[in-house]
Image (tube, rainbow, N blue to C red; front, side, top):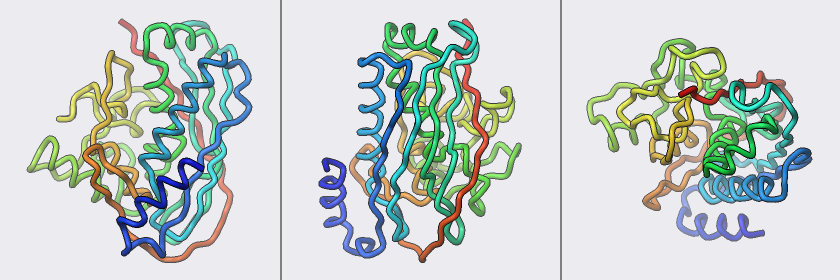
Length: 254
């Protein structure tokens, strides 16, 4: 209910898109292997994304169901887990994810919680489920695999505003291992390695407007850090189910 109230407020500010905007709901279920405090971090991450992605640009309601679990994978360190979409609603030119998984090695969760980075990790992986780096190839003119050049108009505009006025693309990691390359901002981009959607966990993080704007490129109406709203209306849709590949996630070794 809270997310619906927030949505209504923003739609009043956006009369030009009100008739085309769809509602967004994110639900995390299962949660096997998670402690109560760890499960709370998932709820907080849902609140973050529901307050940032305030509507869809299409007249489609998104009810995103994410299965979250904490099995034993390979012990502490190494592979942290996997996260990604598992199904979606397709429309002419794109897709909204409706199903996904988030799987974390139970041995790593306690350490992440203790050092204060678990929330950031969950926000990061939930971003991949929603579509950051995982569905770019299903949209026209966003990203060509292995090019290292993200071309989405909203993120590129914010990158020029925040970091590099002369940029012709947003740099994407193409040098790391599979599971990190082609799905994160480049570690050496002008936004710095602390952005939450670079590929490695390195201390404190931030969420840049460039990162948030990338979700407008995949069909969401987005509230930026400074309160601005970006996103446009677009045409009608049809539904389809698709299986997506998962992305391995790794902790950076010191």
